[in-house]
Length: 211
Image 1 (tube, one colour):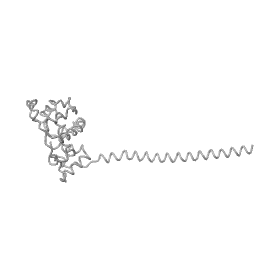
Image 2 (cartoon, helix red, strand yellow):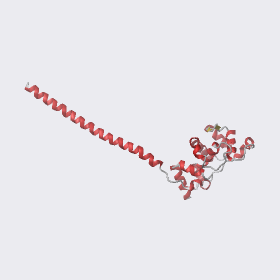
Image 3 (cartoon, one colour):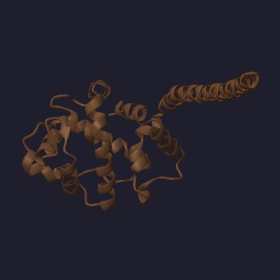
Image 4 (tube, one colour):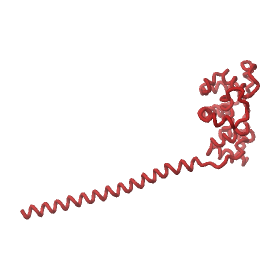
């Protein structure tokens, strides 16, 4: 009986020692996990905040024509279809886009964009750049239309979605301009490109104020 008690005590001590070690390991793991979770939460909150923090946009983002020598679109190729449209840019572009089946309501149909660009441009790199830009601008213009509307001085005689898609696509040339057309040695252009890449929305708003 005494031997059995000693055996029980020995086993009990071993059991409780194992529990103690297990408990210590669990506590250590929880503490490490807690620190990791806190760190992840901290990073999740702080990093996006830092990424979203942009200084005021430099006016240099408005100087696309200085920084990129890409040709402007020749919308005159749509004169046959749109010669009766009003002279305001919003009306003419609305007609050009609809004549090309690029718009469905106010939604941009990306598959129709390139055929329209191939009529308005003769330069392949420029077509490629604009096609990419229109794809990026599609969501931006539709989601931010109400914010863009008061920024532009262009007439709202007609729906301005086509106009804003065009202006946005042109503004994005500040960082999608074909290499041979980009003024890489111009410090102002370097500043504009760096800012537009980091803060595309403030850059677009600044550009629109000049239209």
